[in-house]
Length: 110
Image (cartoon, rainbow, N blue to C red; front, side, top):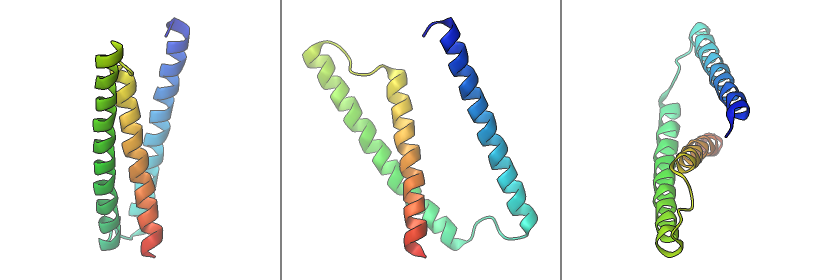
């Protein structure tokens, strides 16, 4: 990326991190003021199951992505993805699968 676009992207990433941080702190403070416990047994169980499933999905996805990248490198003498893009894709897959599984188990258990 050249200078101007990279500055815009970096500013967007920083703004996103700040907005998410403010939202999380606000939500935790609101839950503490409500007087109810932040997590009960059901919430812990659902979060644990979702985290376990997301860990396995993310791990298998990274192994498959590394295998495809190795095959591209061996047969076509060029890697399929740079390390940065592979890392971003892996984090997105694992995070989104965690959110999806947590929502699915939350709806399923009700």
